[in-house]
Image (cartoon, rainbow, N blue to C red; front, side, top):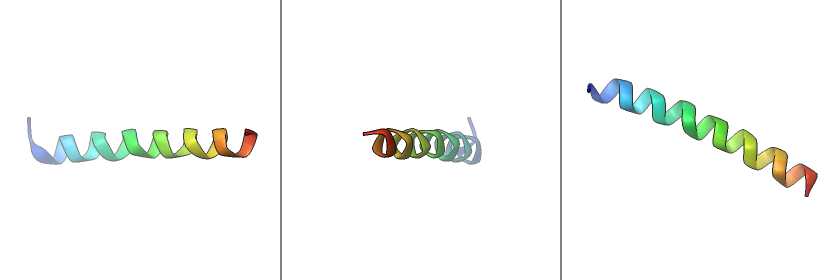
Length: 28
């Protein structure tokens, strides 16, 4: 697997995780 693909998927994953954390933080 190319590193660019890994970096891109990791970026997308961290983006979702950050959004989830912000939502949880707002509701808590």
